[in-house]
Length: 284
Image 1 (tube, rainbow, N blue to C red):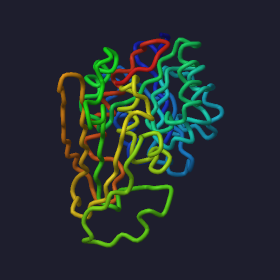
Image 2 (image 1 turned 180 degrees about the vertical axis):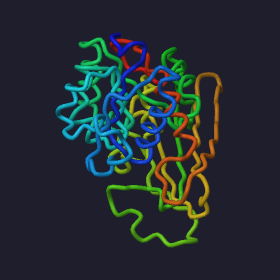
Image 3 (image 1 turned 120 degrees about the horizontal axis):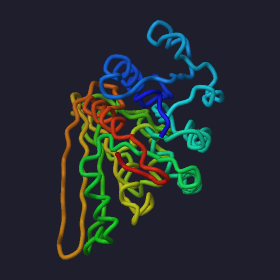
């Protein structure tokens, strides 16, 4: 892989809370861990002024190829993955921070084909998913199978209602103190379009569980007004002969925060793993 000296050149697409964290971390610690910024893009470039060096601000995303880089990191919205994912892979490795976009089977297939065609890696960060590598190994071995009355892979995400960003009006009538409300229960393929910014953890699990895919992985999102300090992610995995694993992760998060605080460090660790794995999808 051609790099700038010994430093991996990173392009960051999106400057919300997560994008801002990654940019600040690269500017502060990048050289020590082999990373440097190639560019930063945000839909509203004014938000970058004073926070990102002017020479690193990319005004027009369609001109990204003018800023050579080794890894492009998307941390804004699934629509960017749909519009630019194939173009990104034609020029560099691509880390999909909004893997809910991969619930679209046509886009998923085309991105995988592009990764193979160009010899690039389509990186999918684990985010708040605990045990993703284990799920992947179980799936690859053909042992990810539900027992009688059980789902092979089930994920429940519970958050305070202020933390959800839904495409419909399912939560428009919530009131403080109402307790728990199941907002959706079904396949992750159907859930991703409803909550594209909230269920990237489930999307990462669906990528790990390739034998099941987005349709075969079952997910549930729960609004809970008691969860004012953290998000809860529960993962239930089953296999043959009574095998099962149940994990519960409590991820500290502020009211209204889409992303839990522990996920920021997880993304940073994922970025450090993007060293080029050529022509495939890689859960990092």
